[in-house]
Length: 49
Image (cartoon, rainbow, N blue to C red):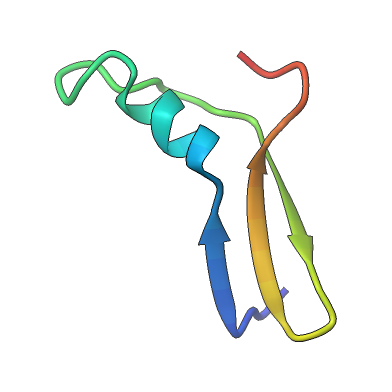
C-alpha cells in the first residue's frame, strides 16, 4: 500500500489492552482501507474476536 500515514482505530487499541500488558492477544483480524490522500486506516474486522 505504501501509505503516507497510518491510523489505527480505537477498537483495535481496546482489543489489544483488554487483558492488560501481561497477556495481549496472539492474533487480531483487521481490515485496512486506503483513501485518496494516501492515508491507510486500520479497523477491527467485522466478526473478529
